[in-house]
Image (cartoon, rainbow, N blue to C red; front, top):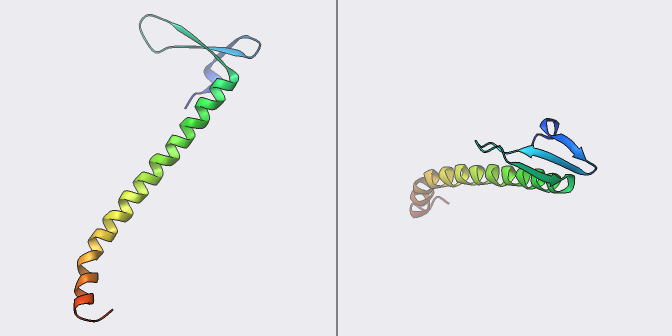
Length: 77
């Protein structure tokens, strides 16, 4: 996520954020672009969290399957 407090204002509506490389390039982004990037970063974090939860749930269901099948074949369901 972009830390807006670390960016330095240069002109109205624009901020400069130095890149993390040895050449020292500066990228100029508008505040709206930064908001969009922050929103997409947040959305990606939520998607990643949902993927983790889905994987955990799938693992639990897979662990339960033999027991459910056993009970089903014994007529206990």
